[in-house]
Image (cartoon, rainbow, N blue to C red; front, side):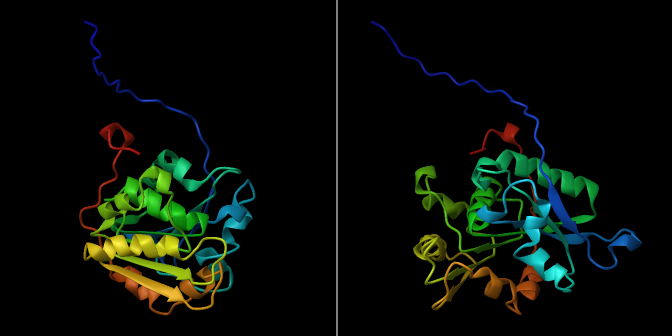
Length: 237
């Protein structure tokens, strides 16, 4: 009688890549010393993909910097290549974060991840892929793809402080995509906040990033159990 047996191959595939990014260093950083700084990672939306790095400052925290606002943390904004989404760049993002930690004075207990639209999707997906890397998440008008096992997989984030934002008149990414994820987390008594802007369309990020409580809230969050899981751990998506 023929028999079917199961086997598993484990290995490592190395691929070259280039990931451009914009960088903001806070006042006082250049003075050096032993101080470690919080880090905010910003993932842009679909319209800012490509090879023009100026686009990553079109919206969000770097736009605020260009308008004269100072922040008490390092900000990095990688740029996704054309016709690719952040969920397909998780390995590159892992290497990117490792490089930022190795080359800048980063406080690994205070690494925050945020993104808008496609970057909101990327925030949820990367955090699930790296559940021990971030002290807080701020996904804006994002969601997840059901075909990848969401929203149930979001339960791995039940201990991470999350503040999600979405406009209830959004015709690009329906607000239900955030509501479903938030509900899963609320059912787990997770530390999640949800701001639902009444009558606001897809651009909920302008209001969200200008919330006066957002920066103080971020800076209150810490992750003493920081660990950047490698692909070799065998737990990647």
